[in-house]
Image (cartoon, rainbow over all chains, first blue to last red; front, side):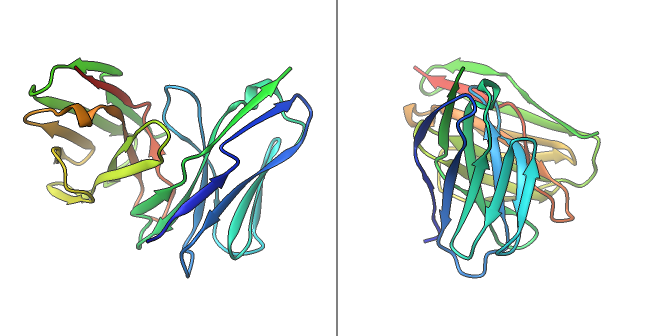
Length: 111
Length: 112
């Protein structure tokens, strides 16, 4: 069964303290991997799509990278407003019709 | 730009009552539409998806059903709610050109 595993479950950082979140997937022939940010009581907000090993995408303090077995979301010099749950999802099927989501990493950035 | 609307934001229903949650998308045509449920401590679970009017695929056997009466309208229904139907329900859309899924702000459903 295809599965996406995220670690750690929760992460507490001081403002400015950089770190990385991990997303491991277990399907052969990855068609794509998405990163989302979810604030409490809200729907997930799309951040990045990665398609092939070695690919990198950046947005402000976030950078997503992809290897053949896992993806990382690097957070550089985080601010309190970066506090959220970060979800990764693996693409199944064609036409991006199905996503398998991990359970997320809850990030708290303290001032 | 495209927007997605879900309502209501919160809903409290008794066991055995019917359910209707609505989702509409604006600013795009022929979107793929999805219903997910998110339980505490678990990942988003895909319930239904649709690639066109009247075309519904179900991912898991359950007490719920979905319908797509118009191109940009997706409805999640139940005839009799169970306690296990409680959760956070999210609607999403994607274009047909292999773009990411974009989510609404969800409905928090509590069954008493």
